[in-house]
Image 1 (cartoon, rainbow, N blue to C red):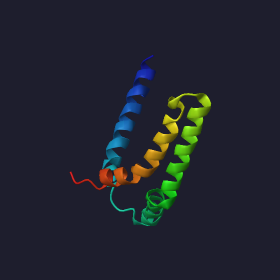
Image 2 (tube, helix red, strand yellow):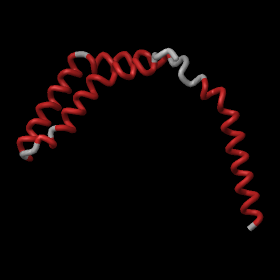
Image 3 (cartoon, one colour):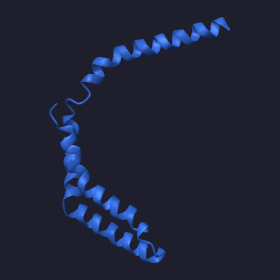
Image 4 (cartoon, rainbow, N blue to C red):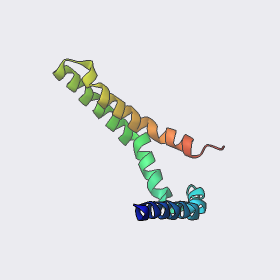
Amino acid sequence: MKSASVMSRLRLFVAALFAVALMPAISLAGTGGAEFNGAYTTVTDWLTGDLGRLIAAALLVVGLVMGVMRQSIMAAVPAIACGLVATLAPGIIDTVVTAVI
């Protein structure tokens, strides 16, 4: 029984040591990353451009058809919400990530 307690404390100590060792890396996690700028710009342009509007319109039509088939407007809500999120998410993410604290 005593060895289990010692092992538990040792694991806790190792986890705490590991967390403290990674703190500097975690604090710098949001900086840099220039190699991903191209991919992020491409996806953002797709979602805010014509492709994003096409996806949102298609999801709206799918949601409306689902609502008519199930005879409930609640069937259309997930598809409409998905279209809204696909269109608005890039702007929200830009605002949150580039916010100055």
